Length: 254
Image (tube, rainbow, N blue to C red):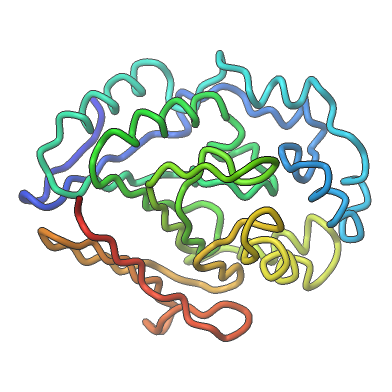
């Protein structure tokens, strides 16, 4: 059975297992490409940091990422989750996500982006369930954004669902991982400023993008509102590289 836990009438938590039943990642088919699903103009814009982005993406790579036969949850867990969340009577349904579901293109293989067909199917289902929020980890960054079906390459299409990604607690930050991948100190911070923050079509338009802060998220729930506040290791508001604090995400029930 799917682990889910009602916490009174205002909140129910849904815990997804995104490791045990998933299909193999598409990394091999993509040759480890840094951003295989990014539109070529975006790839070209960042080719100074990663020259390989000038190269076209192999068709087999995109076919693998978009293959409807590939799954993140597995058929039984997908069915159990969608049935449980649709039946929930709680005001707020918080999905505790092992890997993010929003798009940000860089190294998508381990995230929902690497399983795009199932990502689309799940989001379109959840768009018809009131007050769903994703609380995610694994990327080792603080990223707050509305989850979109599509962000770049055409007009953005939003799902109406928000996601807060938080962490890390005890491992390298996403910025440091990008630096290591590209062999260039400061590359992760640059990508945060030049791609994660600008609005589409230039970037992701994230409400918060702090890629190099040890952190956690403080969640407060009432019958009418859900508030998620990113906090650093000292309990202070998380700040982006510019010094601007990440404002809490405050959602009102519909």
